[in-house]
Length: 498
Image 1: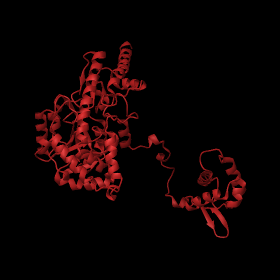
Image 2: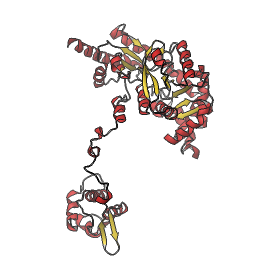
Image 3: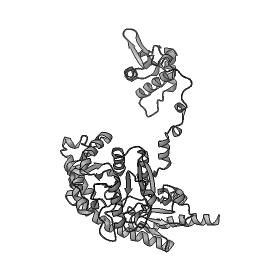
Image 4: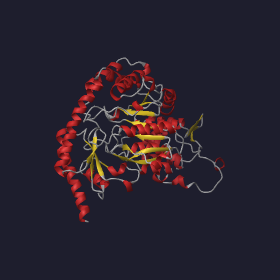
């Protein structure tokens, strides 16, 4: 391509009515032509004044494009001789000898995933829709005390300390660690001090950190079946071997066969099993603690929404019964405040706290100290406990409204998990396709999750729909559930008639 044809090429391809500025268009057109070989290495490009005249552009526009291309190595300016296309294409001698390119070089993005990546995505539970009736795990966001939070945030923002705007030290803001420790001691009977609290971005990060620091590839990890999909996927992606144990009315079961092969980790939700809802009995808790102490296993207690209990006060934590430092306690503010806050916490044994803090900083470059400071004030000034009390009353009303709607449409259909938390499970016939019902409901603007998706092996899965009610306006629960009821009746009716 000659200098003249460069002008012709650019005249043909410039979009004078497009949104992109002309200087950026010119830069990209020349860059792409050089990369594609359309404009060959060694070619002298037109002087800026001449090209500007040919293209009817200002000289500054052309100069910008040339300067950017020169800075990136596409063009070379030779003093007294003009500007040339640089020769940057790899030479055969620079490449290793061999045959054709590896097949992965031309693979579609979906087929280029590793086995681990493909396995992770095949079991993914996160969906595009994260808000609306009846999305599980979402608190009421309209009732959050926005004005109070804004005032506390403004107080810090008026003259922010530099330490709040940089990276963290791995454990989190000291004031927040103190506030979390105080809350957990009073409300959850957790045995902890601020020095044992590690602030994270949420339960996923906490589980990953535990897996990385205390586990080796291939270590067995007991999980509940069913369980939260995020727990199962983070465990698997960390290289641990998940062993699913069934849940009964007392929580995680401990079959003799499984106990003969002790695991490295035991992941449980003892205060409100997710998603079915049973509370782990005291005898089962004591057995689990004794087993872990004898075999050196770590119990990971995910206490995700125990603040919201409607049949009595919140239950004491499993960690508070532990006399051997084998329980690592996980919590989050996603359910009590709002998910977008992305602040969780963990309580680890004193001896492990420095290592967890250093690893948290090394792996995740923790920060958000400004938000930590705001949240610490929110807790210390009593706003957090006040908000939780208010929401507990509101959620109890919405739970009752949801239970009434279910009874209206389906009589005594099996319902579990309604004593605490932000969701319940509506049981379905064993041969129902709960995944198909969930898809059909989404088409009607209703979000739900199929219970079968929470099981490690779909062949052993019970059928049902996991329904969150906390974020649905009280008066909307009845009408919204009416829509879902139509979907359920239609889906089961079509199945029976097939």
